[in-house]
Image (cartoon, rainbow, N blue to C red):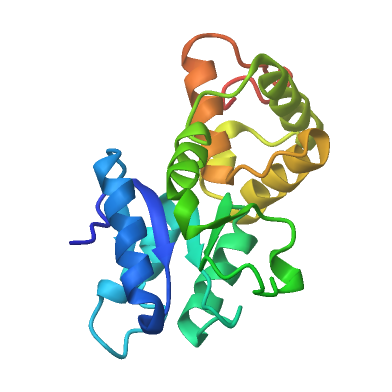
Length: 204
């Protein structure tokens, strides 16, 4: 059963026609200790409901199961678009058929045949590891350049998205804004986060 309380490790998106592959992917991830939300588990007729929106927002990554024709259903397209807008890490799982043509809009994301599902699990888990020292330094530089206190970012999704975009420009790594925010708060608690100046000191 899908859960949406708290954080979610993986938002798994697939159309009903790809349910056998989707269920195989979900089981492999759950066996690896990952919490998975599947929109296909919701009652028929659901679109971008509040539950789906919440699961997308709190998930660490989106795993998309592509059809054998290389197309997306209406719901999976909406879910993919939301994940892209939020700069979520995205992995694409495709059928074994090597002749499938990957849509151009997915060319920036890693894709795996279903036989390499273990690699997908490893990729998702790696994305949840702490940032490297180089990535932490890049995040600090972006934070200082934006001049927006951490506590303000919590309540400003647009600024958080901008932070994620600037971080990707600096590092080439696509990491969700929520994950970057978690890292910032973690470093702040350890006393390793920069202040933004005297006027900002109380809120950084």
